[in-house]
Image (cartoon, rainbow, N blue to C red; front, side, top):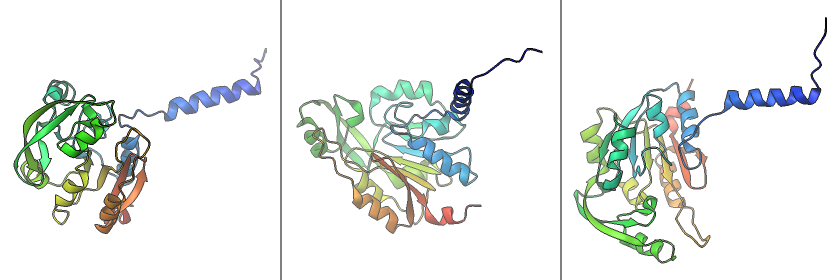
Length: 239
């Protein structure tokens, strides 16, 4: 019987190929946040995740919630840019899309559409600061309604969503503080905690981290751009 010789180097290469293909996962977030969050939910024995995505932007690209949609979950996406509506209808048909902003009061406000739509904002100061770097412009300003986050939760959720993703360019802390965490206690938050700059002077928003820890949420992970928080009590009770 003729034995086929396989070199030790080829065995190692074949083993590496097998391991890579076996463990490879797709992420839709900017820095892999959705995979970290998915691991949290798996550890907690949770599936069919519900979510509230505040400042969703594109339905799939740089999305912290699309992975959970693909896995059978659903929720509410708040994205004020009206040009993104057709993409949500195509890719997120089970989700509720609210084409409005998030505010502390129910009112109307100017929405600043930037050259890069991930930087769109309801904050005039943020829009002008971003434009001041020279690469971005305020392309258009439109008037849109604002809804308080607690109103959105009451109107669209019978139970608290498992995940809240928050990225609303310069207004994250203001909206976060308006959310009634005595009533609504999501298991996981993914919050942008880094300021946008183009001159390498970005600042970590430690006030958000301190606030969440004070509300009994632990920091599970941080990708520099976003911080992932888990309800401390829920995490303690994991099996």
